[in-house]
Length: 267
Image 1 (spheres, rainbow, N blue to C red):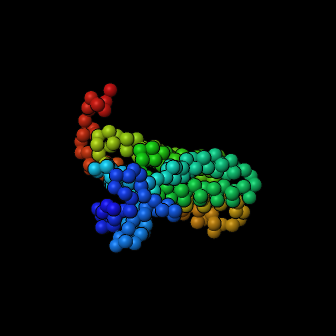
Image 2 (cartoon, rainbow, N blue to C red):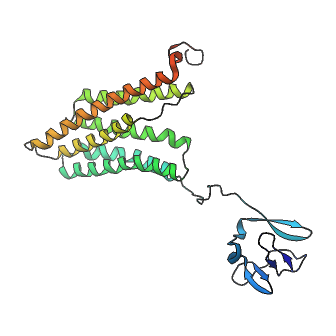
């Protein structure tokens, strides 16, 4: 009988035998003061994650293998990236149902757009909570967001629900900030998201949803039209302010380095 080093239990396996002692229930058979007990009941030890170590011809438990997922359990699929890909796949469906003349299809387009917008919030939250933040996800998430907004705006311009210049301002702002973010990363600067940026994202999603629903509302229903017009102007204001704020904080963090010619950044 040998002593279990961590809690004083003694194994009933004869000294020098090979292999783990076991009982019919699948646990490790131990004895203390002449009474048998399972190791799982003593230490809740999962023997599949224990590395056996030979000491003097006796197998003793070695260190546990590290959990590759930080204790949360291995996941075969990166769920946040899957949600981001779902958002990209939903973009064509939004366009197809939006350009249809059927009011039922307009409602379906609104539901699909709302679902896609919710995945934008959900994938980031899940990635941070489950520690699944990856470079691929960091790259795909803003691309999916901008693709969803740009495609919906172009479709709304096509059906005369929003002026073309408003779509140009919103899409142009997204492209400019994306390019500036790439420059900041190349310079080693980090420009964190601000409250203006988050408000811009929310107002854009609300504006597009309201404009999609307005397509199915009769033209004589003026209150809904006035509300949608007000939301468009609020969204336009947050879009411009957030873009200006991002440029300001970029130059604040980099100084004049972004304006000086450098071999690594200029041809």
